Amino acid sequence: MRVLVISDTHIPLAADKLPPEIEKEAKLSDCCLHAGDFIKMEVFNRISKWVKVYGVSGNMDDIMVKAHLPQKQIIEIERVKIGLIHGRGAPSGLIGYVRGEFCESFKDIDIFVFGHSHVPLNEKKEGKIYFNPGSPTDKMFAPYNSYGILEIDGTDIKGRIVKIG
Image (cartoon, rainbow, N blue to C red; front, side, top):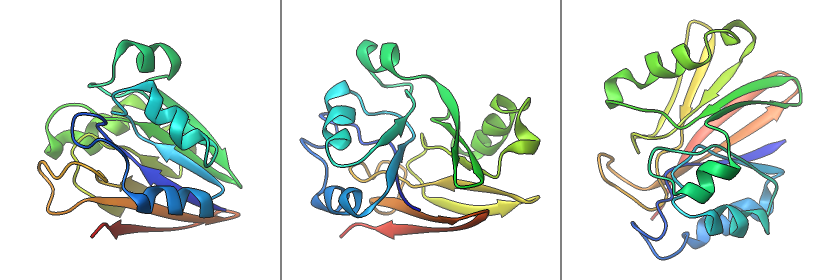
């Protein structure tokens, strides 16, 4: 399974629309994980026209997004359990925050996907993968715009960060 991973699209605040790379990757993927800060529900709806989307709400999302999407969820793809959440607080404390939010299910989750900091991350710690795709539209706190791709085969997970531009 090929999974497009995005977060912090911030439309219409950071950009008027998604970069063309996101549409292209969505159409090549089996599904998309969006780790919050869509801002408007229209962004979720637009991506959903290209691919199945699993999303969570973020701290900057409007009332419609927060009414339709949970703050966190666990998704199973192949035999991989994914904890999907936006994030909160300082970037230096994000992994601790994510771990705390999934403490009851922590041992069962293979990969944690989150956003919030705009800083891309693909790191393995204590047998768990922590994956932040960065932001495809907003470079605040980040050196470049980016998104992520996960390749999942059974229990095997290969993740990569893709720079835009």
